[in-house]
Length: 463
Image (cartoon, rainbow, N blue to C red; front, side):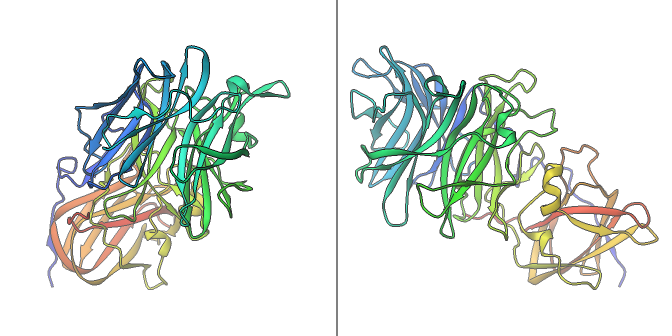
């Protein structure tokens, strides 16, 4: 059968299947996102001198530019400045906003405001902070466990926390009352800066911005380390078998960092939220709007996250290249083999390599033959309409690629992007119904190339 030559689309960015970081929201900090019962996403940020703004989105990517003022302090408020890091929890048809602020005669504390609607307006339920342990507290995060018990994680701020001559921000946890409006018992210290990567800021040193998620019975307490205004601000995590620990920090920390990217700085203070399909996990985080300057002007980013086969929490980021939108229709049930060899599951596990330190656990190493090529065979579970193929580079590049669908339709001379920050070759085309795809990669003869992921898109959106 004679092969039919085809051409890929030049309109990838306009297709609606992809997005690119940063998202168009800047001059903020500490983004927190919920997926509300009305089906929309709402984002709350450090964003105003007298309270907070809220943004709304149907899909995590397209945010309404007309932000809403969801909380403003009033005459009866206990706080009047330093409004930071709001987080909202939906519980029994109410929305509870836990926020950081300071008052005329009180240093940083955590407050609580409530609303009937995710976009507010939020009104304080007390004329005083939620609790006061005699020291500055910031960055509240609430976690409701499977048994209905509630926990609040917060940070003892370095401004009022000094030990051994060094100021520290440390993460604490405490039981939250069943009605969400008070703390119970004494707080437990859960995390303190101790890993080498957390010492970049020298003095003070920070563990802050805690966020809890539970997976397969394990509690993952994620957090940010180092100074928020500096390049080294990054995200790590620790695990435990109970919500109040003891926690052990992951050896692969940090899991989100600027690394060697000159165009990225200060990736941190994240939140975690599931996409429209209810299964895909995303990190929403800020980075510096002006990477060379750093500081408080930050912008919103969105990247995928997942748990690997060793139950490690992994983030496929930070990215600045085009990525499939959260509601993209991924084709999941495929097998990828190299020639006649066994299946290569690591090439379809949801993980992409961004930094060299991740290459060992995310890259699949392939070797070209004497003619400088290596062939991959992709088998689909059934005939499926494929609209895009994404080939993610690892730590070593290929030169170009060729795609052949069911031995018939062929796309030739697809170039690997020249810029290292552009992680994938994206081939977008009119839908092709097929059962298999042959991917041929070209490089120097008998050389090693590495890939981290191959993705197929159907063009049908989920959610």
